[in-house]
Image 1: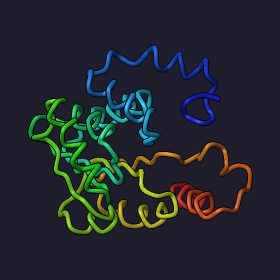
Image 2: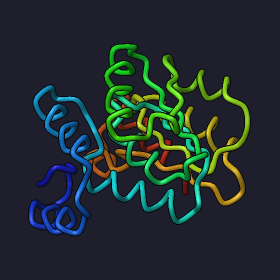
Image 3: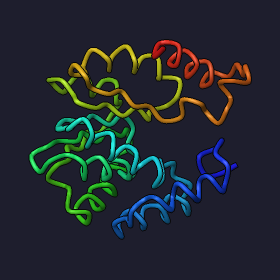
Image 4: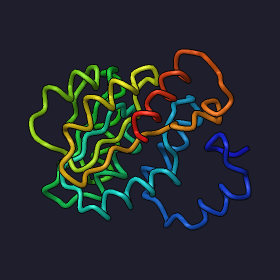
Length: 189
C-alpha cells in the first residue's frame, strides 16, 4: 500500500511523477507533516483539488479542516487573484503556522483564516460556494453533507477526503468514524 492508504506504491509513484513541480513551501510542508505526523492530503490529492477548482472556475472555496494549510495553498493557487479560500481549523497554533506558509506562497491575500469548529464557521460565512472541501473529523461527515450541500452554487462541488477510509468502509467495520463515513457516502449516492 502507498501513501494514500489503499493505493499501490508503484501507482502512487506514477501519479506523483505526473504532478508538476511544486512550490518550495509545499515541499517544506510535506516534510513538516511527515516529521510531525500532521495529516495532509499530499501532492497527488493537492494537485487534484487544484485541478477541480480550476475546471469549475471556482472563486469562493470553503475548506473544512485545514491543519497547517497545505491543501489551502493548492486551492488558493487555483482561484483568481480576487478569489477567496476560507481556511478553517480549531487550533489557533495551526492557523498561525499556516499564515506563515500562505505568505511565503504568495497567496495570503486570497485566504481568510477562521479558527473554530468548521461546521459552526460555515454558518457564519454568508453566500454560496463554488467548492467545499471536507476534511474534518470523520464522525462529523454526515453533518457536513447536510450543511454543505445547500451552500453550494448550482454546479458546485462538495469534495471529501478519506471517503474510502483506507478500505474500512468496504470491510464492514463498525467504529464511529467508519460508520459516519459510510453514512456520508450513502448520502452522496
